[in-house]
Image 1 (cartoon, one colour):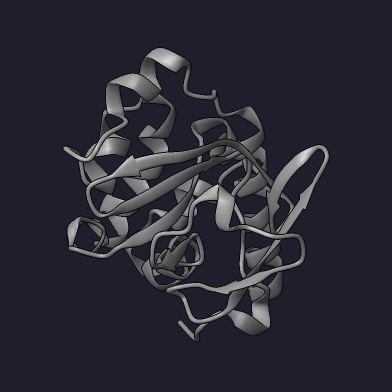
Image 2 (image 1 turned 90 degrees about the vertical axis):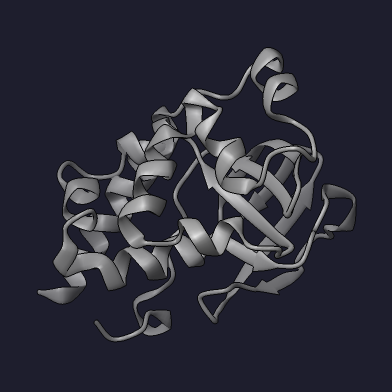
Length: 177
């Protein structure tokens, strides 16, 4: 039953990501810069409002506003909308906070990693404690299968790469809730 719930959440996350709008150049110019921390940057972008709500529900705002630096692979609203029906709502419930924290911290890597630092097949340990896999080819960059649709959005405490899907740690990589 727990595996089915996790799989359902994963599907919902991917569905939301696929539906998320990408920031246009005006959004990027408006939020890009060292004046905003990662959370402020996300708040300024309508395309990341679902991520902001999830970060708030997980109690991770202060962490992502700290000095860092952090690299965040930020799923768009469409990415969250692509998750199976009810998954996001379920994750936002207090009793599922541990799972939400696991998923969100799986999108964060300690340090500042720019797109020029990425190489095909590389892995990076996440704040969640397990690794993501980066692939680079002629078609672009993927992180655990999610495509980077906007890279190198700079913040005062790190860097954000916008992705088109929610990435989910495998069940054996998740902490117990």
